[in-house]
Structures are given as C-alpha cells and as structure tokens.
Image 1: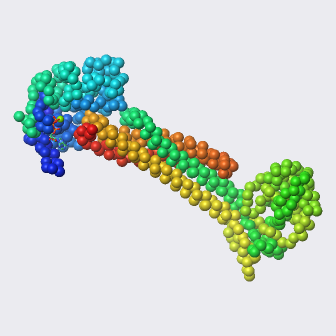
Image 2: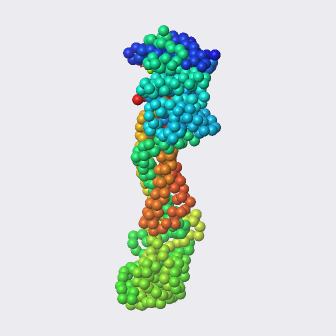
Image 3: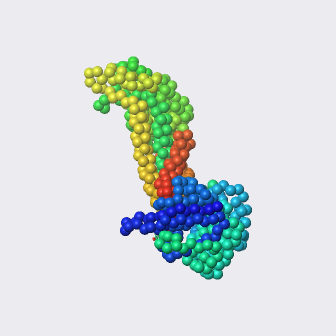
Length: 220
Length: 372
Ligand SMILES: Nc1ncnc2c1ncn2[C@@H]1O[C@H](COP(=O)(O)OP(=O)(O)OP(=O)(O)O)[C@@H](O)[C@H]1O
Ligand SMILES: [Mg+2]
C-alpha cells in the first residue's frame, strides 16, 4: 500500500514579480516501510514537496493522499489531527519547544492526543533514541545539537505515526553526529516506519533505499 | 491542562515584562475598587442621614427677621412644629469663656429632637441648661456644674449625644436652655427657625406646599427647606463624584489593557516560529488560542486580586480619614466593589488578549515555521 500518493501536484507561488512554480506536475508514490531521500539543488522544491506531504501546505492543483486518505479537501482541524497522529516531523533546526524539558517535549504530542501513560512512554522513547535518562529534565538549550535532534526524533515517534518527515535533519550537525543520527533513523525504519528525508548530503542519501531528485520542481 | 502550563511558563520567561503588565492592572483595579468603595460609603452615609432627617422640614424667616408667634401658630396648624430661638453668645464654663450657640426651646420639644447621653432633660419652666457633646468634651463638663451666661448661672442637668452637623441646628457645639430662660436672657420675640417633623416621609412635599401657601400668601415671609432634598442633593453629588472617580480608575484600566495588548502582541511575534512548530506537530488553532488567553487570564487574575486587596486597604484608609467611619466598608454593596474591581481587571486583561491570541491561532503553520 502507498502511504503517500501524490498525483500531478503543482505548487505555484504568486509573487509581485511573477509566479514561481515550486512544484511542477509531480507524481510520487511512497510505499509503507520505505526509506526515501529527496535530493536536488537549492530552490528545487524539496521543502515544498515535504510540506505538502506533511499536510502543512496545500497544492495549487493535483491530489494528495496520506495513508490512502485524500486530504485535498480537509479543513485545518482535520489536517492538524493528521499531523498529530499520522506524521512525525524532524526539522533542520531541531525546533524543540524551549519551555518544555526533553521528556515533556516527547510527551507533548501524546498529551495533545490524550494518550494515557505518556510519562512512561516518554522515558522509553528517550532511552530508545540513546539519551541518558538524567538529561530528560533538561531544557532544549541545555542539550547539544545532536541530543536535541535525538529528542526531536523521539518526539516525532511519540504518537506512533506512519510517516516520519525529516527536512535536512543533519544540516546542523557534524558528520560523525550525522551518521549516528542516520543509524537511528535507519533502525526506526527497520521497525516499520516510512521515512522521507530531504538532504544535500550523499552520505545521508546513502542510508536510504530510494532517492528522488528534484530539479526546478520536477522529479528527474 | 497543558496550555495553562504553557501560559505559566511563557509568562515566567519574561518575568519583568509580565510584572509590568500586572502592575498596570493592579493600579487600575486598585483605583476602581478604592474609589468605588469610597463612593459607596459616602452614599451609604448620606442614606443614613436621609433616614434620620428625611421627614424634616426647616422653616426659616425670609429676609433675616424672625418668625413671629402668629406665623408659628399657622405652621403648627399644618403639622407638629418645633420653634427654636437661637443666638450666639459668650459662655463661661468654670473659668474658660467661649463663644457657643445658644438655643432656646420649649422643654417638651427637646426630647423630640435630641438624645441625651448623661443626666436628664429640662423640666417644664426650668432655668437649667443642657450642653452639646463637643463642648462637654472640650471643657470636661459634668452634670451638676454651672455655666455662666450673662446674668444667669444655669446648672448643667444633662449632656447630649453627639448628633453631627445638621442643616437645622448644631447642638454638639451649643448650650440649650428653656424658652423661658432664653426670653429672660435675650428679651427676644419670634423664632429663628421652626422645625417640622412630618409623620410620613411621603407627605413631606405636600406639607411644605401647605406651609408656603398659608404663610407666603401676600408676600414671602418664610423659606421652607426639605431635608430630604438637601440630603438627596448631596447624595447625588457624591454619586456623580464617585462615578467620575471610577471613570478615572477605568481610564487607568484601559491603559493597563493597552499595555497587555502590547505585551501579548510582542510575544506572539517573538514566538511565531515556536507557534509554527507547535502547529506543525499537531497543536490545533484552539490550543494556541487557549494558550494566549490563559496568559492574559493569569495576568488579569493576579493583577485583579492584588489590586482589589490593595483597593480595599486604600478604601479603608480613605473611609477612616474622610468619613471617620469604617463600618460602611463591610457593607455588602462595598464588598461588591471588590469583586467588581477584580472582574474589571480580569475582563480588561482577557479582552486585551483576545486579538493577539486570535491572531496567533490564525498564523499559517508553514509561514510561522519559516519565520526567523
Ligand atoms: N512561501 C513562499 N513564497 C514564495 N516563494 C516560495 C515560498 N516558499 C518557497 N518558495 C520558492 O519556491 C521554490 C522552492 O523552494 P523550496 O523551499 O521548496 O526549495 P528547497 O529545495 O527546499 O531549497 P533548499 O535546498 O535551499 O532548502 C524556491 O524558488 C523558493 O524561492
Ligand atoms: Mg528546503
């Protein structure tokens, strides 16, 4: 089954100086359990594509289905629920919530969803991404970049989503930390999660099973 | 509730800013509460006066002369009337001489108008006197002592209860003698004023009309004052003053509201990226809205409660200083201003938070996420 299905997706940004076709008639299918990388030059539309898959943005035309469900006509609340329950995000700047501790950051999506036993599960997740329990009470600014990104992955996994979307997750990390992180993502994929990673780094892409390349908003 | 927790922590992040916003609310609520309580106490005090004197009419001679015996008879026909002769004279108590008001009244009228604290009232035809509470205190007078008034040395047989400033007579600072003694002393004819006690407060106006019709037929000889109108006029004046003061208090609340709006706008802008992240990982618009509303609610509750407590304290001080009386402070209608002040503070704060909260909740997740 395809967890992600894009059919002839076009995204046009209308700017005062003319319009930009960030995605041009893109059709992609990603199967459950895939580990996919998206590569391409800067400005080729990678982030745009990922945002559309992640229900953060809507295409100008074309259809998008996540987990077999067409999301083209959904309202904000429904899209928010899909992001909460079906998708996990990992960002280049880690983007943990600064007022919450590491453990609370992991628990947050579960609290939003009303999951029982989120405290226990947060601790488990923290351990599973290889972070010492002592660091659980630290605020994000008391963690290293690599640690923050591991916590971010744990947070992305909190609600057992079908898909993990990572936009240059290693972009702010050194190569050693990057590799360790990709190992973690690979393990996660091996436990059945579909993962889509946007990257410029061929080493990162080397961890994945399949690579799409975007140029000027088209898949080549 | 996770969004309440967020609100608390976000306020803690900018303690100084939050404290300033709270101070604004405190000042506004303090002003509204204190001024409201003060206005209410004054109104209650005026109402008490109205209850005591509301059924009184005071008849004065028009043009400065006295009211003649004949005119008094006519007033007395309309309603039960108390004639009063008055003068100001030098009185010697022990060895101190002082200027006081001297009232001459029919002895049977005195208990109708005044209350005694010590001793007894004057007997019919008595040549003794009563003294007001103020001079009794000032000159440490006791029942049985004598006062010296011109050629006479009346014995003090009673000391009156404090009555406060009135519009008819001011007995606290006076010496009261029988009409007989007064006539002997001053050789006067006629009365300086006539007090009419109307049985029913509803009949006050009609009685006034009757007296005026009878006496001012050909030319005006008397002026009739309704205590009710005077007290009510004062009450209205104080109502207006307290409304005006509360208006000033409200302006400071509006200023506080604007500062909260400003603080909240600042934090929605500063936290745009964070809001984007929260939205991206599944926080609903409602969640963001609640988070910011809780922030303004917390500011409002803290400011409102502290402001009301301080306002009560200030109200107490002012009551004691202006009215010499703190009992009105605990009247239910005064306590109401505590809650009113708190409610105003919370209301102002939450209303000021509405727009920033709404704006934050409507941010587009991707755009917020891209914000640096
Ligand atoms: N909100 C927007 N408004 C207007 N134009 C946009 C917007 N977002 C992206 N674009 C444009 O769309 C194109 C694709 O942008 P996108 O961010 O998807 O590229 P990218 O492949 O992720 O690049 P990079 O590798 O630098 O992150 C670019 O030309 C960009 O300028
Ligand atoms: Mg990008």
